[in-house]
Image 1 (cartoon, rainbow, N blue to C red):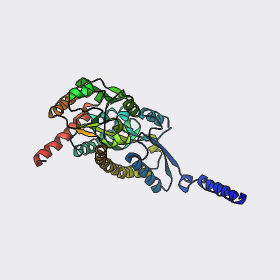
Image 2 (cartoon, helix red, strand yellow):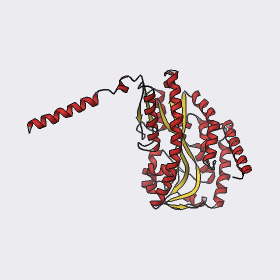
Image 3 (tube, rainbow, N blue to C red):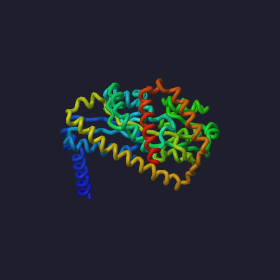
Image 4 (cartoon, rainbow, N blue to C red):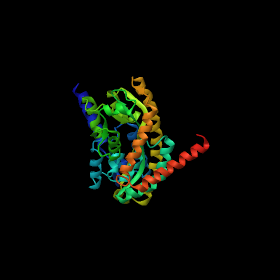
Length: 344
């Protein structure tokens, strides 16, 4: 009996010794990127970033490795950015609201009820991406890719089909989101400002009863457990950015910096496809779990667009530039003219 126990202990120590020996890729790593994100581990966003990191490590023969901190363990967007400035982090997956405090023009895609299709979203982002990259570079950052949460919908504890009912609800708005704050104010709503991690506890306590998220996002963040209805009109578009420190990128040999950019294009394009697929599947899952779809009245949709124009008048040139807004509207106008000519 003692002999068998002794053998078991030896086996355990041998296993631990093997685990403690540095992997070949770690042993020859020259560049370690510490990257944080609010995306929960196991989510489609975290999964694709892990895939991106693995390919970069493989293509650099282990000279570039990553330490990834998902699920907000490094704090919210502002905390992540502060840690990037002092070199504690080298990059992150940011929400639109978080990174737009640093690069205000990035807010323009978040204007409520602006887009009508994914085609419009994709065309505008493609057209604006060089402008976004320039703005990020001026702040010492490198924008590798935009990421998508998707079209967001009103999700509530009680059915909401018009603005009067929305006014009576206890609405949430993200902290540091001047565009949506102005939009709600114009509608006549005083929303409760909360960070993303504070939303679920606030739903659970009844501090709020109405939130805005994509179908998939509501499942990943568990918000759907406290909402029973979804209003079918898209309220806006939610997105983010994968951003690296320019200093960290500049330390790399040119071939590695270019490789990272190339690999990011591949993986974040795949992420976009999977995010949209996940949102479609999530809608069915929500309905299977008893969530009811409420149809917004046609009048409500018209009223939302009126409030959007008033919001733009209050925010353009202040929280994002006139130039980036004009570029956005020009692309949208061209797309819609082409669609009307084709009869789409």
